[in-house]
Image (cartoon, rainbow, N blue to C red):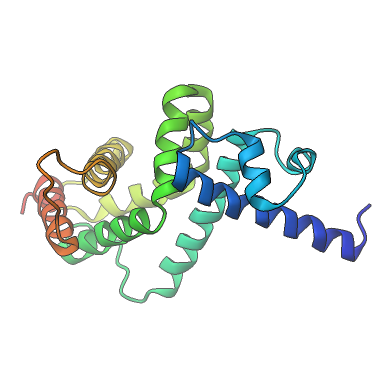
Length: 200
């Protein structure tokens, strides 16, 4: 059993490994990052990594869990949040939240995409971590004039559109070097979704 000081030390090591992983993912990408890269950046012995995570994938799962928990807290605290997807303002709020979340966590978002591509089992576990958020979002479709019989399909389509668009403009960038303003991106995505879901 860990004493108070040992618990604090362990928690400090875990936090240091997570932060180091974010930094190394940003510099090298998830696929090119080795566990020794993470422990070196964290200033920890390589063996200490395995006291907290079974591997790089498990660390990524922990990062995603942390990010989603923080995002959930932000939603709870924001009084402007609305679950009524018949209202364009509600859809725009969700699009803007996603866009800013993606911007703020680019290394993790790219890591999630890369990890799921090379390890389908890990990709499924990452989806399971997001299951509660997807279920919550599915409830928003009940407010539409003609609610879908299976809103999970709509959630999937919405997420694919947002993730694909964000990846193209915030990570890859178009070949011709163009950029897109945040409000332009958010309004375009909002209009597409509102028209598609609410027929407006």
